[in-house]
Image (tube, rainbow, N blue to C red):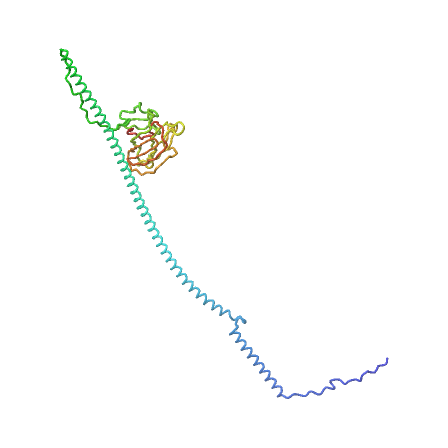
Length: 402
């Protein structure tokens, strides 16, 4: 093959065309070293001052703050411990103060309670004294009224008896005058007829009458000295009662009862003297039966219930009852009864219970040891029997019915 000729003329090579490099002198190399040295110093200065600035201002970027933080934290902990100690001491002081305050408040509360109890006791004593004074005044007034009424009644009866005596005396004088006239007439007739007739001399036949007196006699007074009068009383059983050495009638079973044979009492005054069982734990109920068996269509009468705790009477009430309840094993004793009225009382301690009960149709008044405890008006009670029912061991010293 034939070799083609080059399209362009062959260029000379660069090596052949570049100019020859000139050798720099030594001074030029030393100048460049100084520049590099200065640049290095500048860079080192910038690095030093930058590091110093970072250490002083931003140690956190270099993680140099930990030691300082630890020291600061320790200082804070120390201050916190001191503050906590001071707080604990303050709390202890406050606790001591609170304890002293609580002790003072407790003492003050105790003093207040003691004062309150003393005031309550004083008020109760004043109330009791006032109540007792009122009861005494009422009893005195009632007694005075009864005495006045009895005196007025006695004066009226005395006046009436005096009038009767005067009438009798006048009648006797008239009779004596008539007898004297008759004797004179017989003497004159005898003289006229010519014969003597023995005529009794005129006599003063006016009797010497003492001033009339009237004593209010009860319908009956039963002291049981001679035993139980069966003509007056109907009893639960004769063996339920015995006669004590003092002449009192003692119950031998709980619920023993007495009822009058006469059953037409409507207006009356009843005095009963009871001898209760005395002592702790011997409290019981005692009953006075009024107008028993009087109402076939309802309750058979009204019972006066007297509650006795072994030393004193504590309550008195009026209760309707039936004879079927009286006839039960324990009768009305300690049995729940409907109350017409009931009063809590404080009768002074005594070994006897003296009862006075006035019944005037529907008006019922009850006195215990001369203290009026009940005064109430009911519907008129039909006539009926009067009775007593007491617990075992109790006794009846006497009953007077006017």
